[in-house]
Figure (tube, rainbow, N blue to C red):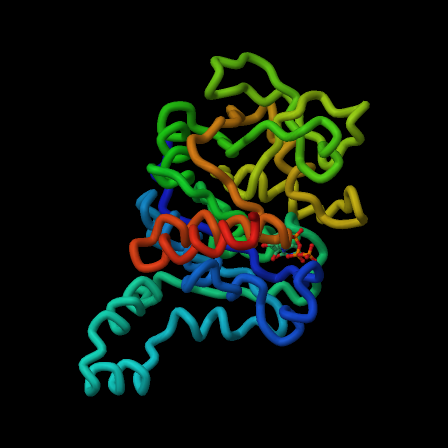
Amino acid sequence: MIKPLKKAVLPVAGLGTRFLPATKAMPKEMLPVVDKPLIQYAIDEARAAGIEEFCLVTGRGKDSLIDYFDIAYELQATLKERGKISALEALAPSSMEPGSFVAVRQQEPLGLGHAIWCARSFIGDDPFAILLPDDIVKSEKSCVAQLVEAYNRTGGNVVAVSEVPREQTNRYGILDVGADDGKLVEVKGLVEKPNPEDAPSNLSIIGRYVLTADVMKHLSKLERGAGNEVQLTDAMAKTIGDVPFHGLRYEGTRYDCGDKAGFLEAQIAFSIERPDLGDAVKEFLKKYTA
Ligand code: UTP
């Protein structure tokens, strides 16, 4: 029986070194794309996939992420008193059903696999989604919802994948591909950050996963991999053969907001289609690219 997917883990304990000094006193995941923090894009995408329970894996100095999902009594009262209805409405997506949101601490950033292992009590025996909030996927249908649809057919693990230039395989988790119908690919193996000459394909995993709890027994060994970190990719690779494992070529565009160029591109992509900003953005793009 395929268990329904209701939980998501959002690891946010990384150091965000590529955005220093901005991230010295502020979590990377609170950086806004236009006027919404990265974390809110991830929560919106998960909710659109029917996910109801959330676990943030945070680290020191990241408490503003937890406060962000709390009620802001004074602010809300002041906005109400002043009749600022649209500002009040903008706050709505950051409110959480009581008890649907927990946070655990990853005391040391020992890698993505270690961050997920820190959420083991929340996960229990249930399937769960992982969303890395520094990836934003712009799509008609939520990327996680696409993964959940595939998961409801295949069961097991389903990860979102996209093609990357071969010379960049050493930046990503790369798939060894079996049967491929052009959309759903069977995963025969996984390698974290292989050199281009060793890479089994150029299909890379992006920051969206649906996994069964089977991965946890491998993570609990806390074995170090590439970069001396506990790699989620290595633990997922060990589940191949025990559970079905697929990659889904999702529909949508992914912006790597953990990278400065990707972050700036996302600002343009999301602002240019806004009725209140689009014309102004097109004008200044003309000015700066003339
Ligand atoms: P990144 O590799 O982007 O690392 O992590 P980072 O620390 O956030 O950023 P840079 O590279 O130093 O600029 C991918 C995701 O995994 C989380 C991060 O918070 C991010 O969402 N992560 C990474 C953890 O939660 N814990 C870790 O130990 C490592």
